[in-house]
Length: 373
Image (tube, rainbow, N blue to C red):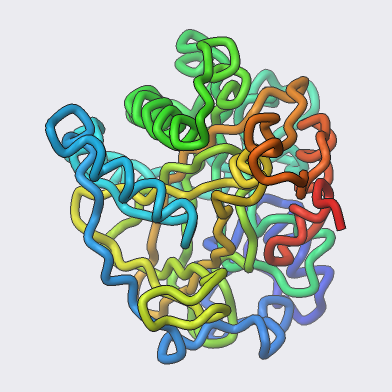
């Protein structure tokens, strides 16, 4: 690829990083020594590590769901979903060796030359419109909504949408398709179990058709956060909640994930940020907007964000499970009857999804699309 421009103006940087598919990594590899102005966050959006508390809750052992401690584990899951919307799990059924392989594979994918990754970037000249690699299942990009953000996010990603095994193995990047597919398939078993537990506590039993409707769209992302010369000025991901049902997240050992408290918990105050430290072999479970809506607000989709680091690049690998586009989501009738009031209206999920991706990250504002004021 051509040598990096001087980034003397905002257009040259935007074109190099976003339009040409070089990403943040391409910009960092060009030799920058300070964060460009386009990545400098407003002071209120910056992450001060010293201001955050540490989540010291032990991980939940999911293997105990199948033993005499079943009820206790159910209570732990439900309490975490009600209070924080985030919890970590171990003995989750996803092999630890697979998790290590995923992290290595993510580093290898993003370590490729820019032109190798840019074939999955729809706006790049490396991916002409006639190219067979322009498929709807894979998207390589940077930040979240670059055209709409006041300050860009310090992140590159590749997103792989699942339709079936055959198409995943045909269209997903060869460098990461097999390990990503195995991760998705083993994670989905866990997701179904968690949804059953959370719905069961609401007095609701989902048949297979409804479970598939609520988790029917599945995506594996590999996120890459290059080392940053001024991490105190930037964010890896801005404040947001996830739009789907449940997100499964693999962190690497570096950390940088922060969750905002929606209420006072164990001496920690509402509105404070809590760091979710990585635990070897554990996965992070994140409640999404869909579950908050279905539960009429009982379960919380957690507002979260990601910090950058100056010492080394980090990766994370989420699996997003979200409803099918044609599914209508709204508070479950059994829950509304018990609560006496609906806090959200029923919406077509495709409309909710379009609103979510049509705006920059702004905390839990995405939920306002369905919220009844």
